[in-house]
Length: 140
Image 1 (tube, rainbow, N blue to C red):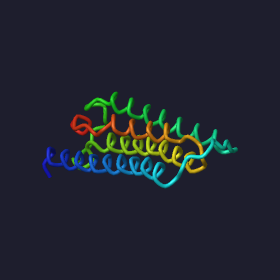
Image 2: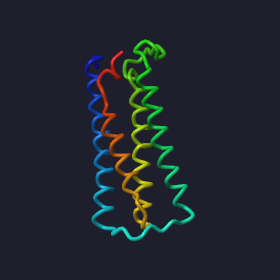
Image 3: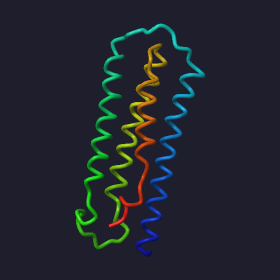
């Protein structure tokens, strides 16, 4: 397979994964506001760990994207297999997006418990949306 076709195939796959995670995060927000009425804030023993997990998931995802931006096309180990070129960035992107989605899931759980989970859900969605796949990460 031609290298440009391989890059395009991986880029399209990354776009599909990114869109699926973004739509899942939107569905968490919609579900939270349509299905669960927010009551008074009920702090439980798990509220703080949920908030911290969501926050650190977002930070970890951001650090992974920082690493992706630092990757240079020639910095990846040389590969004799054209099929594996560009695999490191897509793998890192998927891990980062899932960590961003983790923030939204933690926010949904907090919202279901009666707390204010929408900030975590909104943060997760915003982070996914501002970190779409870019073709330049697959070239090299």
